[in-house]
Image (cartoon, rainbow, N blue to C red; front, side):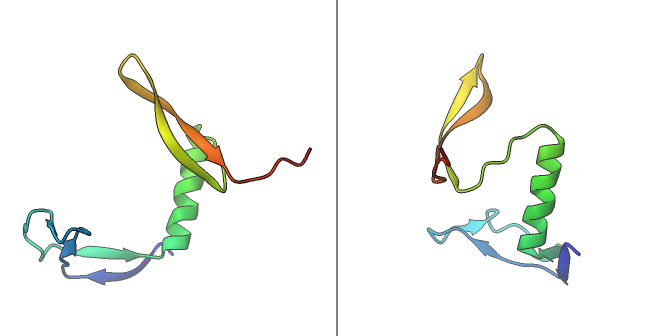
Length: 82
């Protein structure tokens, strides 16, 4: 189950202390997700849509073509098995 709890509202603060989104109504209902289950479901959905999954890899930049983002530059921390 993706949802672990429902909340009546929340205030979210950025690391610099800014209230997000700009102090708007925090009484709107929200959901608390089970992060591991959500991440797995999101990855499966992305792979089904054509994404490639790379573990132990960090994005280092974006690849652009005609003004569109078409991929990423990445650095893998997985050692080759050769």
